[in-house]
Length: 462
Image (cartoon, rainbow, N blue to C red; front, side, top):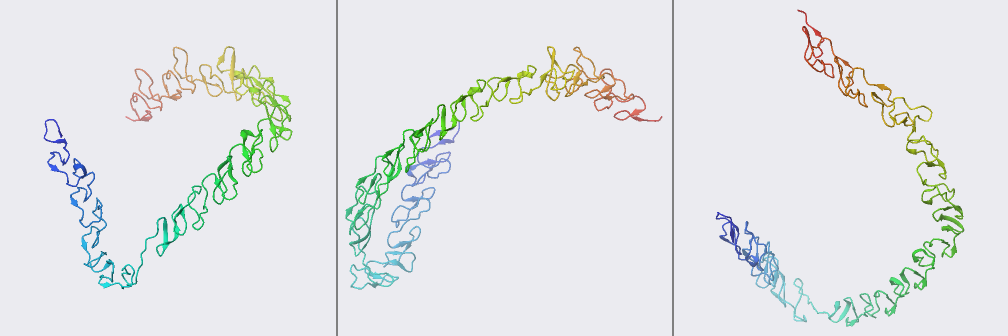
């Protein structure tokens, strides 16, 4: 038992007690005498007790252990109810209510078990409702059902014979035919009426019970009993189980059984026509070498055209032509040679805009005329054709506006807006520093005398 410091409250109790003061005992039916510290509920009841606190004993008339939650159980003879609380009539051995029996002692029948069975009943028992004799015979061992106590009509799995006295062969998978002992199904890898023959060692997943035909063949074999090896040139040693034809051929071979050799440099072929060449070759017989300009010797089977060029700056079907030296970054269209990024100093037909930023002595632009490196100082727009506003204030580095035309250093006096395109009203009051109006034209320091409004456009008569 442990307690909180400077407190009378316990953090845990000795086995058999609960609550913060550990003064309440756990229910007498709690298994191992333990229960929940906070609620007192048992974790599990001993046999013979039920409820969450295990404080109620099962009925003494339960035949076996009662349900530990609700107390329900199977009743001893003479009692009924979910907890065996009801007592049957004196003559009953079993009942479901207090007025009639559901089973009588041997030799009695009727709803209250007061009529004797006929003296001719062999074991003294009879039907509870009709009084007709009942002969209840115990079947021999290994019988599922029997007639007259000795003639079995069906056997448990693994036995056969008139009284199921004989064991099925260990070669049977499970059961056998009752009269003869012939296996219903053979154990794995056996076949025959008595399952006394072994399937071929090359069978996979057994064989037919009566024929011995393999269900499947192991890799590398084919035939009825998988007795033949697949042709040597079958790819991955795999072939059709019935015909022995290869699923695929090893590189360089063709035919149903891959018996034919493909032309030299072929990886695969159909007849004598190559369908795939070794790297670096093309043509019907793979007799031609790809251009050395092809990337990793890769070219198309029929034409020999390069799939990709080996070096940047090359173009053409076989990558044997060089991009123009005026192409930006030496990059051009793979097939036409057209500069894909643009040219230094001009587009295809027109010089680059004069205000494009220069690199060394050259300007650079894309094919549509837009400048590749941006605009020269104090110009903006897609073609760098728009000068910065003359109303932009100057700075120490002479830069007036950014690439979108925004004045970097603000506006000259009397102007406002991001591009200084808003003229301040003459009726705006003077300011000590900065502009007299904001970007939307409203006066920053109010209006001169007799004018009012955001932009000082309202005149007031005296």
